[in-house]
Length: 105
Length: 105
Image 1 (spheres, rainbow over the protein chains, first blue to last red):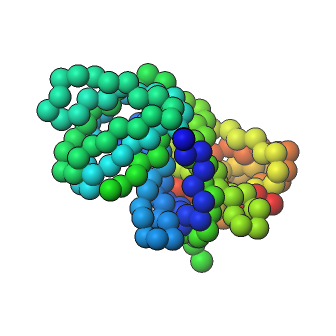
Image 2 (cartoon, each protein chain N blue to C red; image 1 turned 90 degrees about the vertical axis):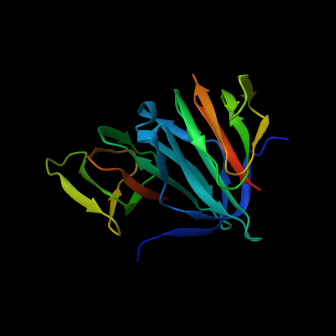
């Protein structure tokens, strides 16, 4: 089931702006301490690095992504998720805005 | 006092993308039903229209703004607010990212 809303979040009002605004996100913290971010990637091809492991859940639009060490581009659309290991990276190719919620492991 | 965090919010995960991504925001709803949005305007000069009256509070960066019917550009920086009447508009000129929380009246 797609996460359309996150309830009971503490929202940091200052945005995270990456790649000259090609990616903009806001950081959320839930009551149990869990951190998440909600964001959008605009049309671009970008490389993101992970610290903690992440699960990227698409909530609107779509993207293609390629994990570090893989040569295969895969598609992720609304309601779909993909996982990135800790201390790794992935490339993302977006042609229509990719809206996501990022769950940290 | 500047609003660095909003607690207990229901966050709509899909972003609002305006002007090809020059403005990106996320919609929040508080427990009492109040709606707010947190967003960022990237370097650009844009015109926004209001439905409900709004208070724009800067949480990082700065902008210049000019309300409909005024010929005066005013500056708004972190911790400062300005109000826009309902069914009106304002121009905003941003040279460094303007991070805001929008309070609806």
